[in-house]
Image 1 (cartoon, rainbow, N blue to C red):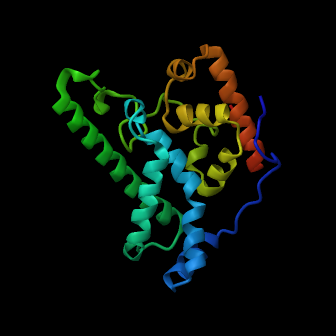
Image 2 (cartoon, helix red, strand yellow; image 1 turned 135 degrees about the vertical axis):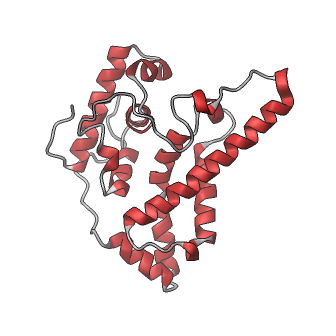
Length: 218
């Protein structure tokens, strides 16, 4: 299995003021900067959406559709965004995305209720491992590897993840974003628990190598 789709050397860190610069230029009417600002966030929102869309909902809604809807709404309401930093910008986008996921959940729960017994009942999101917009930890301990998604440079993390193989992406989304226990990760990926754990360790190490991190994965 190939570890990466593209070059796996360390990714250069983006200038700390780059996103703020794009936000400012977009507000001043620079269309190119506005388009770049949104495009930079597409991969990041894709991973967030994959973590927020419940398993039962994935058969009905593609995460990319949620991302597209989120970006369209953010474009439309850009003038309402009051922040200036990357953290504020990503937080605003996440809130729009979470709202859209919740809308899909309400919509399809309503459809299922009207259909009653005509199809297999869908699982109650409140009883699932990951409620829409809320990642529940799978374990009490939090190692540096488990907390990589909280790095300030989240766009850089998402860009690195996009270069990983599909299996590496999936195991990181399941374990680190959805915070599922390894037993469930293994079940989702149709692997044994030891195989899922080994895959996760390799994926995290690869990601950290691409990010140029000094600490080994745990």
